[in-house]
Image 1 (cartoon, rainbow, N blue to C red):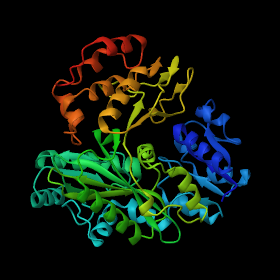
Image 2 (cartoon, helix red, strand yellow):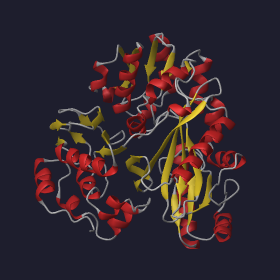
Image 3 (cartoon, helix red, strand yellow):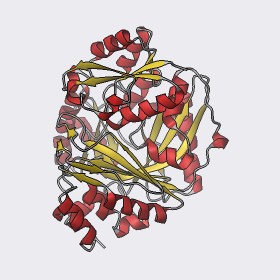
Length: 475
């Protein structure tokens, strides 16, 4: 096991990693930017080291600065968290060439899965179904139109590298496709340094379901069940749930085995996630594989009892998996809400200083957050304030617990997405599980969530309105 590691992560995941390390007896050195000098997790790391100014390209994306910090700090490994350099194979390669272990998969696996076109080919070679589309990257708008006519509209233009919804556009006809193609190329170039895009058939009415994996250096791979990530806006996840409320056992088993087959094919080790689309008939299609810890990993931890960060650290140090597939038994239902500093109607970032902060608690409630009263949400980073997770015996109890917890969550001084979530958890379609990846956008297009418009997104006035105004939510 490592004795000392460097964190080049920030926010709630940095705190989560520090906690896992402390339980394993691993000393932590937290690398931070000047903008994060007041971050609460710096108080819990054994040491801290500043790696540059606030802009991420001068700090959290600055490979020479991070490697220098690792050398000065005399660490054995670097944990990248999620985002930033967590899926940059070149960073993993540089770390290992400097005799510092990268806490993640091999460079080869990262390169293969980071190229979405190559990932589709690998998945297909294992027998997984893939969404119909182009055989490789599409270079011109005319070629894109040809593919669209072969698979029929609507189609999805997707960046060949990266993720997070950037470089992704839906087109319903030739004219919109030509426009989407140019925009997607531009976004992909700006975000990932490559304008390569490909075309997929857009599966309507689909759910986004993913399988959490753990693999070690000795060829052992297991899955930790499924989670539903269909509550999204513009391909950005908002709410996650484990297990998926509509999968039957047959489809669930097939998804797990398919994910394992893909991971074994590329000799995958570490924590990873294979993502699928599941249509209304139960057909499933491989989307991509994320070679890192996911934001939504807590829901899987809650229903399986597995500490994924702990396992990730053990695996990276060379230890064998401490679990077998037969040890994994999902219990109850867990739901997570990403609490973002955003306007709950427009979703525009709403940075600012938190003047009052009180997280909910009680049975079944977990909060992963780096926020506190007086902390400033910076405009230069992701707007995530924290993650609210609940775990109860069944879905009905989990929803009731989340409704209660959302009402208790006090965040003053900034707008947050809490008013939106309060309405979603009272919406008849969500309560019955009848949703897909377009649910939020469809409701917004049809008049939106009424109370999210009147609530102030986290102020005292907003909470009063949320608690006393009858919930409409499209019922």
